[in-house]
Length: 426
Image 1 (cartoon, rainbow, N blue to C red):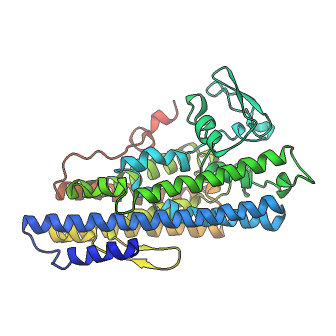
Image 2: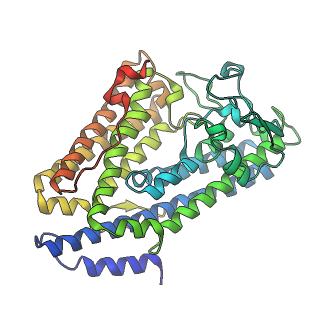
Image 3: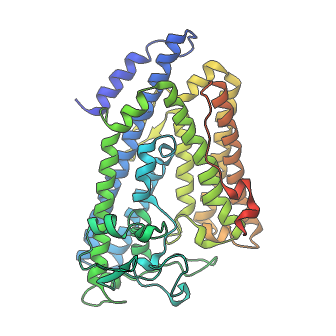
């Protein structure tokens, strides 16, 4: 039997009784059903993230085997496709320690790209905060970490994850995950808040007509990074199987599980997405504070984060193959307790989605996200601010839901960008 069949059979038994029943025993059962479905959707989402990463891995193989404009474009398109299901999993990060501890392997940002490869002279040559600012491991078979020579001859997944990632204890030394791969496919975006993304030539991988040197090592790095991404996603898929550690953890205490769902919704909405990923860049008008800064895909990543937040409440998810998953939802729990609050939560989520979709439409037809946050771009700034406002408002309603369900003290992620903007400029 498939995992999906087993889960669906279990959910059918659990949801046979009405979600509106108010007896304590039934309420506990309903919470258990909601948490089970939440875990089922997590398994589906991470499985989709894995499938699309495997497609990316194959596209990278094709690029390395036959470098051309076409194979580079195909690899970039595969990366873009892989971002969507992964971004919709981010709501699982907050509230699930297993995910939070793992997340930095696959989605850490921003990164000092000079650690990995060549950079434009405008990037600079040194940093007071990071001794590996321009280490360029692709060009150098020996690098210094914490004052010691480290052999970088063999660029393997193990070397990237065990030695280079956060080398020297510096978070900006991001050597693995989506953004390292993004940099290797697009290169630096040198356009500031002007039009255009990164423009790395395919010949950076053509050993017979190599540009910018070390094409063989660059290809080795890219392949190691994509292989590692696939491996890391396999680990997380395993965590959300019925017997996986993340599933067992969330299902052990259904009431606490509801708290975890709301923690994910509120923390991603407020501190992470509205604050660190959006408001900070808008305050500084800094294109370097753009999440997918090499590919100019930021508007799309933010949109899919918002889709993931909404799905955590409604229990709905559309898989990459078009299959639609539905099941017992947090919305039903809230509606049974306070119909007006459920209506408010769904309206706030819908308002945010409309603002995100407007931002995405602008990103596809008018200007990229880094242009939207540029200084003096009144209209673009307003589009981004509307999405931020929606996220902040829905986070406040999440707090009301937490109180209504009597889930105890739950602290959502904050951000100086929202809570203490003056600190951003110090």
